[in-house]
Amino acid sequence: MKLKLFIAAALIFAGLAGLCLFWLMPAQHKYPAPKLGPKPGQERPHKPGPKLKPTPGKLHPEGPELVRLQWSQLHLPAAIQDRKLVMAALSRSLSIARAAKNNAGLLICGNPVSRKAMVTSLERLKEIISIKGSQAAMLHSIQNEFIPYEIKRRNNSKNKPLLVTGYFQPSFRGSTRATPEFSWPVYARPRDLITVNLRRFSQKLPAETLWGRVENQQLVPYYSRKDIETGQHLDGSLALCWLNSPVDVLELQIQGSGIIHLDDGTSRFIHYAASNGLEYKSIGKVLRKRGLLPLERLDWPGIRQWAESHPARFQEILRENPRYIFFRWEKTGPIGSYGQVLVPGTSVALDSKVYPPGMPGLLLMDWPKLTGHGPPWFKNRPSMLMVFNHDKGNAIKSPFRLDLYCGDGKEAGRIAGKLKNPARLIILIHKDFPLAP
Image (cartoon, rainbow, N blue to C red):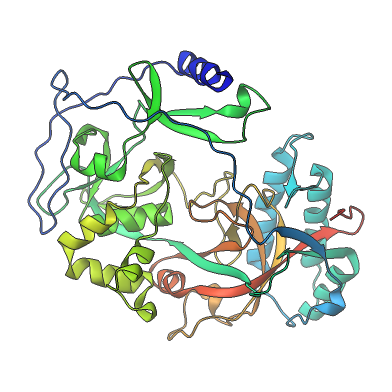
């Protein structure tokens, strides 16, 4: 009963958002073009959706715990990546940490960490890294002043490590209007998409955000991917731009940002604005489960190649992923979830319920086998990176998942598409602020 009252209150504050719909004819393409919405006043009636119910967060089955380590337990490489990248990322992390409220309730795997502890750790790291000298001397100073922590699984009989994947900023050719070549829309956030933060109504409710729409004075789930692409619920007037294929749109949605080279000769940054709030389902996992792609080809280049060879089947499988992403234009990019421009090979996306914004750490990892040189930061293939929590991700919902921002362009995309490696993330906290795991 209390939950219904809270949701009712959310509706009163949110209000009803009308759809602004205009008719736009779809263009012909090898992929069946998505259906667009009807003209205003011609909306089709639709069946009421199920009521949206909050669910408490699931406990991780392995029982994550924060463990204090000894530096002698770690066999660290002698160097990290280019210090200029680290200094740029440190400045961004400091901006994030200083913007946090004193009582922001920062946590590392459920263990409180103060804003002062985070700011001090970052400031001291910046001072150490700015001192000229060998990387060995720099790492020695870090070990003298910082306590290493790691989130591990309790009773980890399977010895599952942290899994690292990669993402990048892709670029696409596009159009400001629908054409026979560009017929797949990239939508802005719809005005009828409502966000409800349950904790604003009561601290007894789960720390969850609901995404939905109003229907018959009730909050119901927002339209799924299948609804949007086949149900004509959104129309062309909501499109920021149009891309060449649903594969391009999916890649943009997976990466969360990109550069669009428009047919009018301009290029613009585009960035994640919102999602429909529905569950994310990996297309790669669906392809593997159905035996359509072998494990060795289950990376983005392999998925794209399969999709372009099987356009109709790809659309069918794609619509099994109900989550849909909406975008906005930006003046720069890519911008992480905490408002800072990402640094290649240094900014990472982590689970925001487990790791605090801006947090520093050391990422220990062996790289996959790759040909070519890769982007500049990857030239020496450092087996240890100093990384900072600058972003979130729809698929990064575990203490044991990390997404590394690899940069922009094809070389960065090649690394990001191949990266699926075990690793260790060593959290760095200044010794003046020991945690109590």
